[in-house]
Structure formats: structure tokens, C-alpha cells
View 1: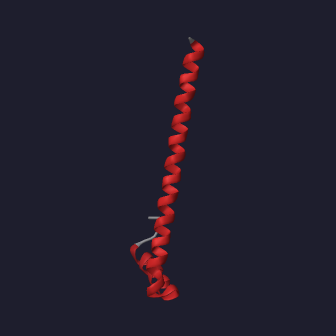
View 2 (view 1 turned 90 degrees about the vertical axis):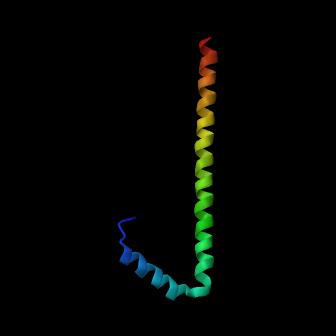
View 3 (view 1 turned 180 degrees about the horizontal axis):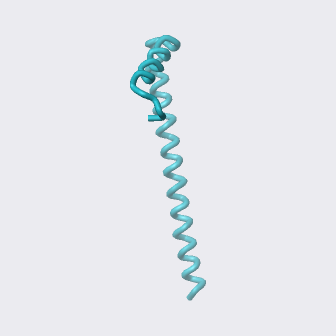
Length: 66
């Protein structure tokens, strides 16, 4: 995972705990999770839009050929 081993991840988590504290860390995790979910939904939506446009283009080409 990003070239990080288990020990590096533990060190990063401990530093985050020391910097932000135990009360803020769950809020930060929730905000990051929400942001990732929204990004995935937006990306999936753009892929769907591209697929719809491709399908419309194929239909237009078929109409022109007839």
C-alpha cells in the first residue's frame, strides 16, 4: 500500500494521535472517508456520463449510415 509497511503506518497513526488528539482523530477520519466517498461517486458519475455519450454517438452514427 503506497510502499508503506506496517511499522510505517503505525508510526504515522501515532503521530496523528499526538498531533490532533484522541477527540479530534475520529472527526478527521470521518471527514476523510466522506471526501473519498464523494470523489468516488463523482468519478463513477463521470464514467457513466462518458458511457452515455458514447452510446448516443453510436446511435447518431447508425442513423447517419441509414
